[in-house]
Amino acid sequence: MPCLLSLLLMTSMAIEPTAAPTAPSPPTKSSEPAEDAAPREYVLTQEPIEEVLARARACLGPEFRTYEERYWVVLTDADYTSIKHIHRDLKSTRHQFIRLCQVLGSVRPMPRHKMLCIVFRDQDAFSEFASTCGRSPSRISAAVGGFFSPLDQWIVFYEPRGIPALVEAREQIRTEREELEAYRKESERTNDAPRVEDQQRKAVESWNRHLEQQRSRLDRLEQELRTSITAHEAFHQLSWLTGFVDCRGGWGYWLHEGFATCFETDDTAYAFGPAHESTLRRDGFRAALADNELMPLRTLLTFHNFADVPPERIKVFYNQSYALVRWLYRFRRTQLNNYLRSLRERADLEFPADFVRAFEDSFGPIERLERRWLRDEIDQWNASRRDP
Image (tube, rainbow, N blue to C red):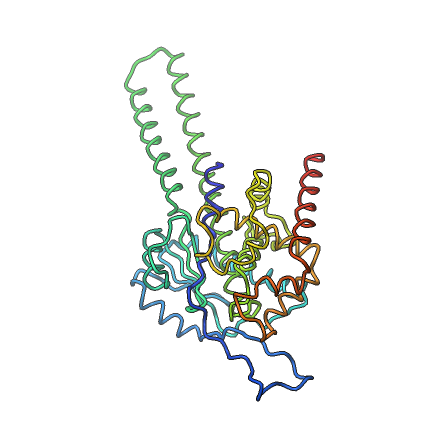
């Protein structure tokens, strides 16, 4: 189980394209708005779903079916049971995203058109799509389970059933079932004493119960992983298409992934988002804190996309970004809202060179805030150990 939990940390990554989407140019001196005019925002223009679908269809085979609901269109070669779960999780993520915008005082207009979600049954097919139509320069790591493409405006991921570790686990269960069946048939052919036959029968029943429990655990884990990945990538899609994100590149990668990991949940029937804790992310952050593996905050702020993060630091980066965004949301919410607003409205920032200055303009000196943040995290951790 710890191995599979570690896998979850790696399957909800989003891939950012190397080129930023085209955005409106900042106003020149000759066309400066009047002082009482609203600050200009930089928002990704949404394409009609028909155009996005046509572009995706050109990259996908005829086995991909179309499932539509109110806000999303899903293209998939997976089974219908999975799609029902994905539709539910997409709608729940949209609802929680709207709540987040309301709490932050940053209400955004929701997308005018339906959005596209592409779900692969097979990990290899997903990886091939990412390297051809997903604008990834090469075949992506098997650890990456999904991504959002601002250039194409779609989210893409593959069914957790296709994760190599889970495929291996199901194959092991299948092998043990064959062994169990062979044992049962062998027991029926022998004429043992009644007492021995009773022991063999109980052994078969116990073995069968164990395999059923393992199968149920895998089914539950796959559903939880699917929900977590769906919510993570749907947040990326909503935040870009609503203008919650500054499409010029003003958001550091920690901000993108910090919010997205806060949206990870294993059950969308309950509220989720930065106001609610992810036990898995929290424990991963605390483990890095205890092992002195955290990156300096000044370093964390400078990563612009996925390629900037050293491969050996990816897991720490995601957990640390989660913890920072959640702490800012809980204890520096007004400053966080002002920071997000400034990234959307200020035309004088040149990214990514000004990541640090933009952060300090809203939160003050980085090292001082970092000391307070980590002190709060340690105090909360100690309190939880005293009161289990």
